[in-house]
Length: 156
Length: 316
Ligand SMILES: Cc1cc2nc3c(=O)[nH]c(=O)nc-3n(C[C@H](O)[C@H](O)[C@H](O)COP(=O)(O)OP(=O)(O)OC[C@H]3O[C@@H](n4cnc5c(N)ncnc54)[C@H](O)[C@@H]3O)c2cc1C
Ligand code: SF4
Ligand code: FES
Ligand code: FES
Image 1: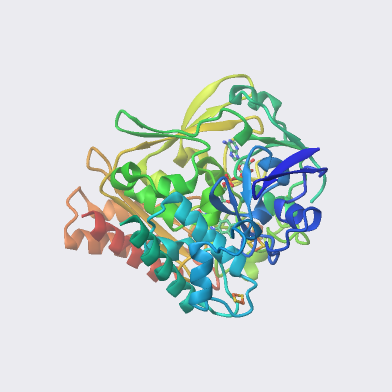
Image 2 (image 1 turned 90 degrees about the vertical axis):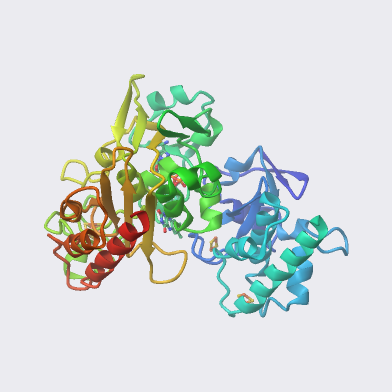
């Protein structure tokens, strides 16, 4: 038995060592916001936060995360209140089908955890490991700019 | 993936004695898990180095830096001291993989990652490097393969960017073995072409663990990389240039051979420490001396000359 802390909640799960975090989040915990595509580190759809850092959950074993805080897209909003990154994605229309969006958002959240006043360049760099097959890149970069403007506005 | 046990050993010093050909160390897992998923490796157990006290610190030491084996590529990328004092390393890690992979990938694991040759990575192909016979890349699809030393049994390139930078910087690794012995090894001697008896690109034994990487200072150093897209691709060609404390210029290329490849011809053409425009022209022209490209990768030669020229100009 293994206890995973996901979005602040402890979840006891019985999993073999070879089970991948992505798979456990989706199949055992029903948290399907984290998407499964390539399973080889080639797309970014499976991005989650592990102790505040963005990682590909397809290249992490669930057993490795026992003492860590896992955050998925389901854990970001407080009720109806979106995070600045989520709000910017809506305001900038930074998605089409939305399949890559949870991963894109968590990558930017990770950059903000590293540096709360992250500028547009740092927030754009944060999503260089997230493919968007709809090609919503221009608006994703616009969202990065909007987050940077609000975060530095908030800090200053 | 075949089933395996997962082990935690709190004391790093006790890890090597537990390792065998089928009990393997796990660091960031970004290479190892891709291999397990493709059933290229089938270990009985993984020992999670992250659950041990193996080094994670970035320390200033006399003449350079000492990085614990578990230091991630992200921490190197964002470390102001390393960016200023060993820019070749910081630039190499910043251009390797993606932010998510760099948050996980460790510097020791990066050096020991296995080749990306598409035949080697295909579980249905048993090429020479995978323990079988013959090299399908030699007469097959080889646009990403080696251009130097191509008469050996394998023409896969070493996939690491940091490795080329570390060889140019004259870095060493500290290795702890299963008998408790510790040794220091130049990265240039750690990474060697595979042989019939040892079909892997490094000299470590099954019970060896890298504990640290020591990097001499070289503020005048750089790493340039050509990719087939702007980010998230292995090097087609990369060039590291570093001016050591005693003024020696070292040039090392990635993406061109089984290991980071010292550009000895280009270094000799510099003929002295003065990086004049004429010397840089001569060195760039000599960068491809001895190259023997395969059918599909002749395009790497002009890339290598151009990156050599740019890298030398940057450190001049
Ligand atoms: C999509 C993708 C793109 C990539 N692009 C690049 C790129 O452009 N440039 C680049 O350089 N790399 C690239 N990589 C490779 C990546 O950088 C490596 O996978 C990573 O650095 C390996 O480090 P790790 O800690 O995850 O190692 P692991 O996967 O945990 O281990 C790798 C190997 O090293 C062994 N090992 C690990 N630590 C030790 C130790 N301390 N002592 C002894 N043995 C050890 C393991 O047993 C294993 O065999 C890419 C990877 C992916 C998946
Ligand atoms: S280049 Fe090396 S890894 Fe690739 S097919 Fe040939 S022997 Fe195998
Ligand atoms: S599913 Fe993890 S990177 Fe594609
Ligand atoms: S919005 Fe469709 S994949 Fe990005």
